[in-house]
Image 1 (cartoon, rainbow, N blue to C red):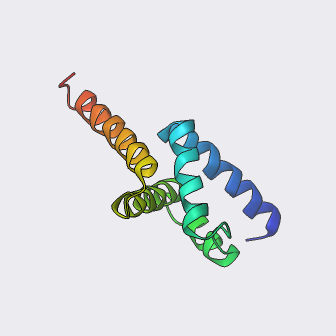
Image 2 (cartoon, rainbow, N blue to C red):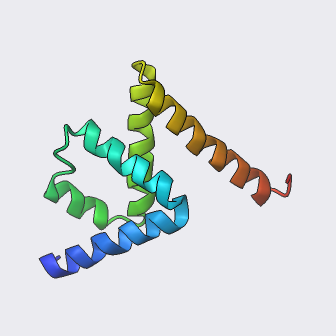
Image 3 (cartoon, one colour):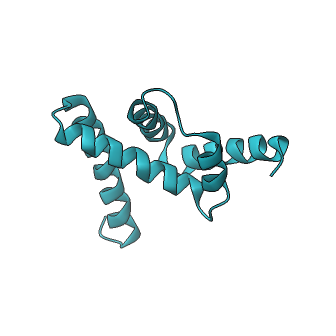
Length: 101
């Protein structure tokens, strides 16, 4: 994958993540990934691998949620609040999908 194609793919992943998971939730999870990598971010080779998967936005969002959960387990109250807010939105969406609300 050339750099130009890779950069375009990253922009597509970003837009997909914001559209599917909500801009605030996406931003929260991407910030969690940055914190989880000591602000280094995901190494380029790993990001290229992620970009080539079938659903990279979901993979990144899930990784961000896992980091929030780990931070929460380690006593970070803000991460706990953010994780719970995301999970509550997911539960509500699932209920609507199943016709319960």
